[in-house]
Every structure is written in C-alpha cells, then in structure tokens.
Length: 122
Image (tube, rainbow, N blue to C red; front, side, top):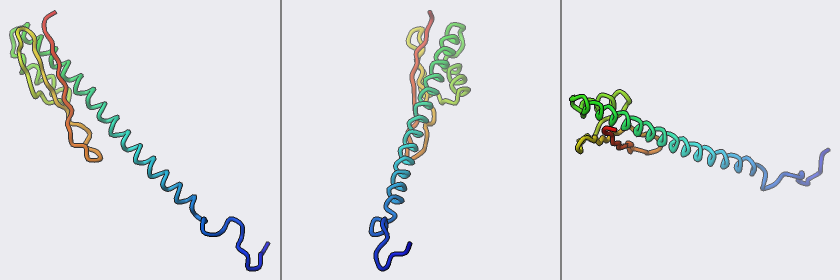
C-alpha cells in the first residue's frame, strides 16, 4: 500500500540503529573472548611450568641420592618438558629448582611464567 507524502511506519532517523548495536555487541564479545583466551593460555603455561619444576626437582633429588650432578639432571628434565632451568640450589640433601616457560605473547603479553619446586629424600 502506498502512502502519499507521509513517511512509512518504522522509517525515520532511527532506521539502522539495531545494526550499530549488534556490531557493538559483537565487538565487545570479541574483546572478552580474546581476553579469556589470554587468561586460559597463561593458566596453562603456569601449570606447565609447575609440572616441569616438580619433575626437575624429583630428578635432581634422585641424582643426589645416586651421586650424580643434581643440577645437570634437573636441567635435562626441565628441557624435556619445554622449560628452562633458571635456578638450582642444594640445601643439605634437598634440591630447590626454578624453571621458566614462555608465556603467551598475545595482546601485548610479554611475561614468561616461572615456578619453583623442592624435593629431597623421603
């Protein structure tokens, strides 16, 4: 049906505003999703660092018990688990190791994640 000179219902200055709102919502969802992805990747990297530190400390403690070099054993195991041994100290018969794994380098994150573990005889 045609109207003579009158604007159609639904037309006017608000036409297309739902599109702008939808695009804005999608942009916010994309930003939140990216931020959650970075957080999840950081948690995963920290768990990997802690696992590598625990295993390296256990290997070092085993090496101390068998008379081998503890820090060499810890470095080998840390490297096999994708980590870099950044510290190794003997404290009596206990071994304390520090390892670092590369963190997620998304959205400006540049920090690597580190963990520490201690192991010794039972």
